[in-house]
Amino acid sequence: MSRAMIELHNVSKRFGAVEAVRGVDLTIAEGEIVTLLGPSGSGKTTLLRMIAGFELPDKGRIVLDGKDVTHAPPYERDVRLVFQSYALFPHLTVEQNVEFGLKMMGVSASERRERVKDAISLVRIEGKEKARPHELSGGQKQRVALARALVCKPKVLLLDEPLSALDAKLRDAMQVELKKLQQKVGITFVFVTHDQQSALVVSDRIAVVNEGRIEQYAGVAEIYHRPKTAFVASFLGESNLLTARVLSRGDGKVRLSLAAGIEVIANDDGSRQYGSQVTVAIRPEKIHVEIFEFEMDGTFHGQVTDEIFRGPLAQLSIITESGLELTAVVATRTADRDTPSKGEQVTWWVHRDDVVIVG
Amino acid sequence: MGVVLAVPLVLWLFALVILPNLILLVYAFCDRDDFGQVVPKFSLEAFTRLADTSYLKILLRSLALSGVATTICVLVGFPVAYFIGRTSAKWQNKLLILVMIPFWISFLVRTYAWMILLRSEGLINALLQYTHVIAKPLELLYTDFAVLIGIVYAYLPFTILPIYASVEKLDPSLMEAASNLGARPLRTFWSVILPLTRPGIVAAALFVFIPSVGMFAIADLMGGARNQLVGNVIQNQFGQGRNWPFGAALGVVLLTLFLALLSWALKKDGEEALHR
Image (cartoon, rainbow over all chains, first blue to last red; front, side, top):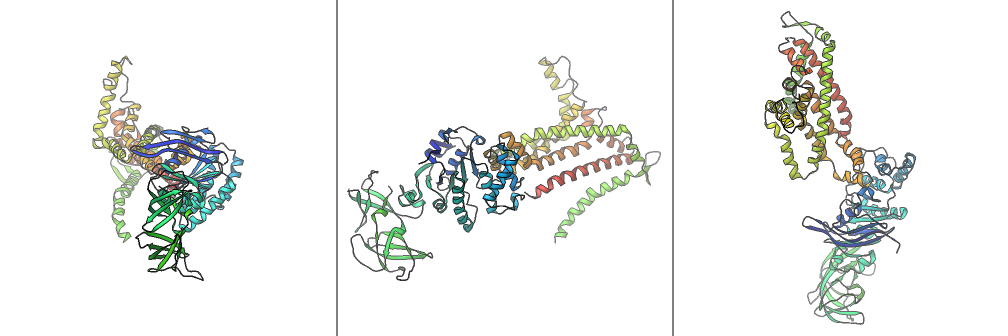
């Protein structure tokens, strides 16, 4: 891993009776896109505001590019923030907004002109230089806010729910665009969002924040496929969270009983202690469903109780004879087979890599 | 329908704003008989009297005094208004009530109270003498200084309220954005807070400047006979002076001055206010 750009060491913050952030440790490498993902009130925005310097931590240290900035005022930190509300200066034109930070940095007039021009073309808002913020659409304001931050070439760009005010189509386009933009400028991006879809599309790594703590911090694929806690498994994508009884352990495997007659195997990485009861997470799309009935080791039967058509995918509710309820997602009809429909008997199985013990 | 709804307002404005000013304008061009009675005959006499430099001096002195009072009001009012506008909503209401409490007491009573404080044997002089800061009482009352205090005291709430209104609308994330972009607090004040609250400041300044130029009660009570302002001169023309046309002419001059000032201020800020 390249060198650390942001380090949070045991950072805590309390607002009155509310413990917003509780002893967070987090390291973000140079040039990475990291998302702080969590529900509202999880403390993710407080973390971001502490990195920007708008809030001071009660405890712990914040290190930016090797320099301790725990108590530095915002204007002395080389980070720029794209505000959720964009916070464009209403009395200034687009150009003057973008130029603001450069003026504060004491950049010469000729260089300012050059860099403002570059930033405006980078976010593709040419032709709007003389417009006032109130004359712009939401998407355009967003671009101006980005340009205003990026033009300063900060060490870190913080983005607070930057996509939440945009409509779905624009949001999808902006996600991809942001990722490309980051690759182009090479600046470390820290995203804050409650939108797990954006988080997956945009990030290299995701830190899932819940109740002031980081529940898991890992690459997107790992965090999706190997969630560490039930919260991560359910907040990021969908999961069947099931209570299981441990039947036996050994050989790096755990034998689990999900219900009478339904025994599955999960990987045991040896990293956890657990008793006879565990919680497992199984992603709906990892459950294989076949419309015809057959018997094999590790296959089970069930009945489809509900089917929701979602275009390319269909979501099935399945109940087994022993009363275990599962949600599965399957591809809809293809040339050689139909989607199982309501009331039909199906056979299902799950691979042991896809049964994840989360607690 | 819209036209019908506007009728009361138009009538009101006509009866109480346009008509009185038209009457004033007509009087300004009327003649007087030997006893000072106004006669409906066209005359420019009132305006020729304006050329007298002693009146010009009084006018300039009034404008200067009001200018200083306005500046003090804005300088004192802004921090107060800013503080109120930035505290929690719970405190905002309480503090605003405190600002408005003086309105519950008669203006004259409040002015007399200041006279008691300021006179030679008043509270301030007594206190300063008691603490041996001064040996002889200072002459505070019946000076320009006293008039200034009177004006600032009377009009300060009118400065706080409009500035408060514009501070309260200020999005706090704009200040954070400025700080995030490297602006130190003073820079944020000049580049963001001041330009965005300017409409409120201009309104506040006009609320003090315009009424205080024509004001006569404070100058009468606290300024004494030597410290006449244009308001006193005008009042005098309609009273003992028995020269209504001249009083009206002075009024017309002031009104023209204010209209020019107002249209300049509105032109500058109106355009921007439209864009918010």
